Length: 92
Image 1 (cartoon, rainbow, N blue to C red):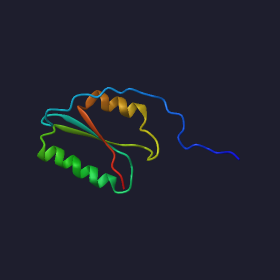
Image 2: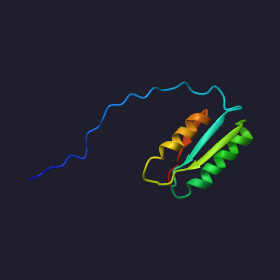
Image 3: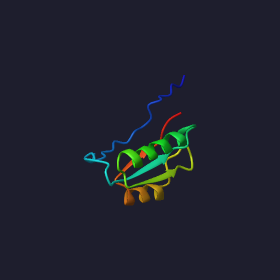
Image 4: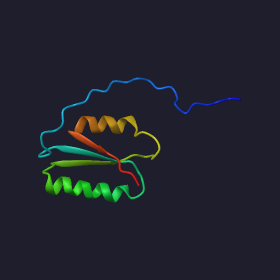
C-alpha cells in the first residue's frame, strides 16, 4: 500500500515586515483584482472610498490575468515602483 502525504515539501522563507503607514493622506495605493467572481465591483467601491474619504492621491488598479496563478512579475515591479501600499484581491 502507498500512502501519500498532503503536506508537501516547503521552503522556509523570511520576509521582512515593513512599518504600517501613518496615514493614507496623499498616498498612492495599488489594488490588484484577483479575478474572482464579484471582486471587481467590490474593489472599485474600495477605490472610490480611498479617493473620496481617505485622501489617497491616486489608486493604481490592476487585474491579474489568471485567477489561479500569481500575477506576472512586471505587475509586481510596477506596483513596487509606484505605490506606497497595495491591496491584493477579494474572494467570492
